[in-house]
Length: 243
Length: 230
Image 1 (tube, helix red, strand yellow):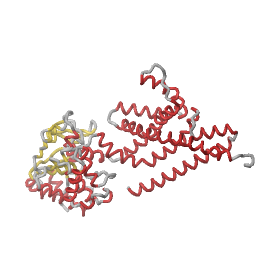
Image 2 (spheres, rainbow over the protein chains, first blue to last red):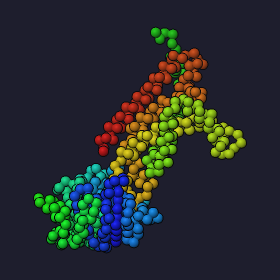
Image 3 (spheres, helix red, strand yellow):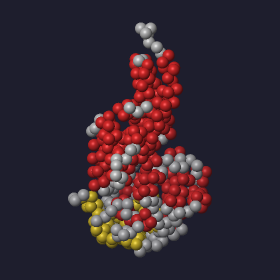
Image 4 (tube, each protein chain N blue to C red):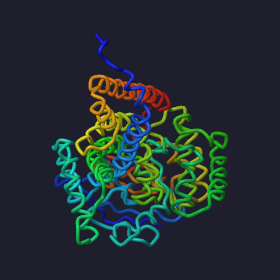
């Protein structure tokens, strides 16, 4: 589904954000990407739907080369859902309009069709009664669940999560993770940048550990949590699992 | 001290002053502001686009317009627009566009430079995550701007845009150099016809002051309301 091969990315001439990153996400697979801040994990996931350009290597999404200049990027991005650290709901639109906008403008669905789909998904994330509110009237956890519903409304073939719980107060993290766990169990293809190792243990198939722009470890979940092969991954795990 | 003044001249010319003069002024202000915002937004988008050449052209335009006195530009356009019309339409003689069209084009072009800077600040005030989220949903650049970025930028900048429009309202009086019948022009005509300069110019000042002041006050109230909602 997602093939990342030998991806290099530079910010300016001197700083290399990604170094020869190679990995893949198969259909129905849930892959968690973790690593210290500044390790390039967010950059990598943003390269997958070309929100960040990269200079070397290839990324192939469902058979389509992302870095090919001829690729119709809006069309490709419409097929992959993305959830951001800071939710990024559109504050000037009501919740239901947030969910309908791209359905109507990108997929060409009728307004009624889009609303029906939106209501179904809002119900699914437990926020049906908030449909007519504005994003600012919702808590962080609720906003993030809306953001997930908004991505799902496009019937994506895969979902990308960029630190979806990092900006949340602790008591709101689980409501978002619950939605993600359900999604994973339904067989959604997911690439998740997160520090939530509980989530990784529960539903991930594979765990990727990144440090300083490199993929240091790419292992099955059991192997990763059993005994990480690299020192850097071991150190990282011992730090975040200490509490 | 007012013994020698005849303030009745105002009452006698009220119809002409407001029905003709003020209508003209308000029409010119509204159309100029609308056109200025549309063109200003386009210029702002050019400046913020990734294309260096487009950005440079827009930047030069803004600097150029902001470095010239408005009266000069009004004059300039009045004599230039017929020739531009001739060039565009390929006519054999300079096109007679009339003073109003000429003035309108001038104000739109001139105000576009100022409005573009306001819209640029407004667009830049939107966090990068917003267009990223819109792009991630598959919206094109144009759709992202139209449905996500510009509505928010416009709302954030509304008080400043309106304040600039109040300045524009006062600036439209400069069309007197083309002897056009705006409010000030009308007042000036009456003043000279009846020899009542002090009365009429006093009255004109009071009217401009009252309208601008009231509008500023309304903008401040609007600003307070917007900032509560956010």
